[in-house]
Image (spheres, rainbow, N blue to C red):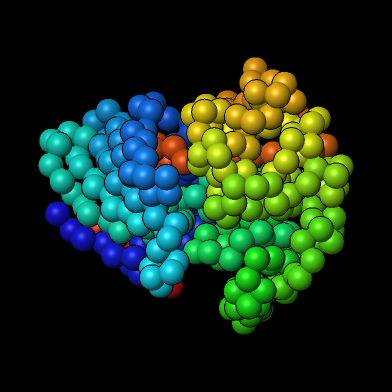
Amino acid sequence: MIHIDFDEVLRLVPVASLVEPLRQAFASNASSPERAHFDLDRMRTLLLMPSWQPDVAIGVKIVTVFPDNSHRGLPSVNAAYLLLSGQSGQPQAWIDGRALTLVRTAAVSALAAALLAPPKPEVLLMVGTGALSRPLIEGHRAVRQYRSILVWGRDAQKAIAVAGDLAARGWPVAAASDLEAAVRAADVISCATLSEQPLIRGAWLKSHCHLDLVGSFKSSMREADDACMIGAGVVVDTLAALQDSGDLTQPVARGVLQAGDIVLLSHRTAQQNPAPRALKTVFKSVGVAHADLATAIEIHARCVAGRWHP
């Protein structure tokens, strides 16, 4: 069994390289039972996410979410991924789960944006300055071209740091100080926060925008208000999002959003002649295990083959 650490994962699989493997994964026969979700206390969470594809591979991700780690100078989300042979059941790789989750999450959002975002957007807004902010921007840039990219965070200095890192790559990135103004300017908005109160207001959105919601994974957590869902084409990575995310549970409970109108990403990717995109689209992800499995398979294959991508 080989060990693939955080930095090696990021070298092996740039976010853009995962969009097509994940497209195939969402159309595959992989099995992903409902993840086991354990609240260790009011703030801390343990997740177990298994998946398997017959005769190909088996995998399980172990995730901890400790929001108070930020006060310790540690990541809020930590994870490890165990990949096993689908033929023999023998362990093949122990992969840094935090890095795998970062690139998988960003690539799934990129895949959704490739299907749902306006074809010629001008402004991308990243809401949140945590570990996912840079990969998400990378993913969105892989499927659409942007004239301007804005970064907003509660901590203005962190937003400036993220923007500065990416601007150093030659990307058109700048920090935004006014969230409402930034939302009103944006054609695509990606949110990755641990907020329990809506940050994005539907009244601020452009009529043709695409909203990518990543952060909320509990019914008490929200990044967007009910108005964001009104008249929107809503797509999810898994129907578990209807129970796990306040961005959906709360508007559905109030009748603002009809559960039967929500579409799975796997159905959207399978459509040969999809209907024209809704003027306003929303993609809500909470993480699905077969996307982790596909990412782990790709990481392992590239490591074994020695294909390094700086």
